[in-house]
Image 1: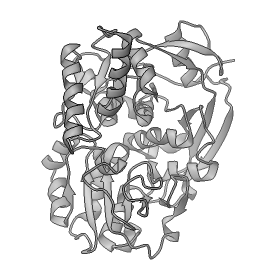
Image 2 (image 1 turned 180 degrees about the vertical axis):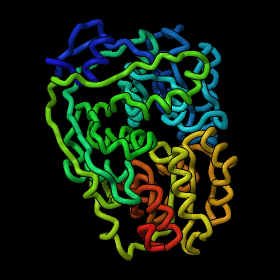
Image 3 (image 1 turned 30 degrees about the horizontal axis):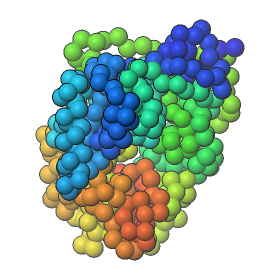
Image 4 (image 1 turned 135 degrees about the vertical axis):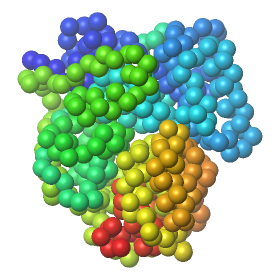
Length: 424
């Protein structure tokens, strides 16, 4: 019997010829990541253990992004501590605010993990890098601390679920719609501690940004990780990363074995899917946008780690161009990284956003986690391209968030209520 994509990577990184679901392995790591919040807990543990040296300063990544630019004295103190740790241990991949962006976007665009490699991160959406054919998963700060020390992690091999997407999508249907539809159809726990392996001929109609969005939200199904096979679309993206440009040009082809065994297989015809809106309070509470009529809104957030890719920015700008944000609505546009922000400025997208009446923000997790730079007040309603709309996630507990793709979010900002772009 052959192996799935995830099993192939885990077998190679545990020194085993083959692994099977449920087996406990020690997995060698190619990258260990933490943001400023998860890093602080990790540092506390390392101090308790008396650790003075980490396993490899070139395989550790620290990216402050949650409360940066620092929102208060406590956040500034945390960031200062992370900065000092990075200097002490000569960590190669420490990225200061204003020079990188949101961790998951930075990791992808810099090529910190390539196909066939492994990464754990102190953030649940670390699974984003599975779009590039890597095994990437979020873990707790104790596991991060152990990985800082040893370069390994103790892990149970997850069963794999095959998701095959077929057909050609309708206009204004993107990866965000596919994953909301999937979560709604199968539930937000159907992949608990399992590997979601995405595939199917439908992806020739989608961009790498759609894959990154879907891998990002594998955790919303309870997934241990989400992963895509490596094809020409993946390779084209990787050839534009910092890692490839500086001479590391080996890109491993990653495909599952034909006789791989899966826990379950699901086939989804994307031609049947309308643009989706995830109603409160779950990413799996999806409805076609045609069923989301007369829902007035106060705020729109476009971007962050889930839909902050350049393609998402360009999509939103194409809707905003020549139009104004509704007078009762405020809009915050957050590119996933500084590089994406720069490209938006160079290509004129930033000007479109500002002329339409949007705030064009620096890269930060801020409003997604209800942290800063866009927190919702009592009973306010937000349309967001972020990954979660849990109760109180983006602000006061009586506020509500609806998740959509960037085109629907931009159209809603102009209309003043949730709207399909064709309504404008």
